[in-house]
Length: 269
Image (cartoon, helix red, strand yellow):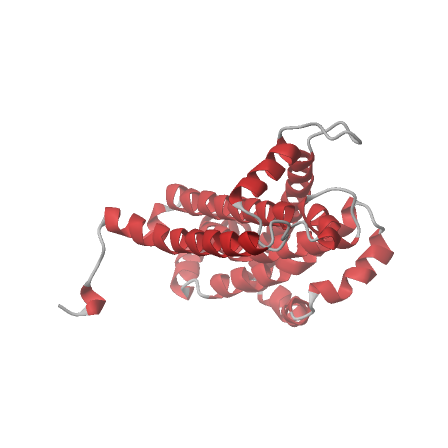
């Protein structure tokens, strides 16, 4: 039996998927116990109990200064910015992707510009965004849009160019005009790819959000992490990082299931 032919069953697959996380937690617990045994006041590797107490204080107790629940207020603020940025970037990428990939005149005009813009490091122009759009919500949303929209656009453009020419010719033979081709032939082929491109861009979107909140914000998950870093408050930072990871994974999982449900033909089902 060759290793390449060994396919794990459902139960074994779940166990293998959980194993790396379990080993990581065990390794962290051992390292934390070792450091705290030497110095009970060590802040670098807090115990799971310390992190649970801190999370309870942030999530389940009202803040004396603001009167709110910091953990949930930060989460809602970050998700609001992220959602707005993703919504604008997705709509922009879909429109531009169709135009660049399906309309030769538009592609010849704008495709080189989009390619160049996609190579600009978004974090490098963050000061420019703050100058142009101010320090409020718009600059943070625009950083997400500028960071992921060009990459998603190029992905959709390439997918549009891969649509067989025979399909377009047959549709025109049956009387389809440009608008009909876009709606009935090109758009259905790009929609599953749009969700896949969004899944691939989620990590970058979170990165740009955290960076913007860390520099200029008064709330949000990124703001809280960079606020407490000066105190080496790892009992706050690590739960926040784990929460961000869980949110990002949940969004990716939801998009994966949405793609399979709405476009089963795309995955061969």
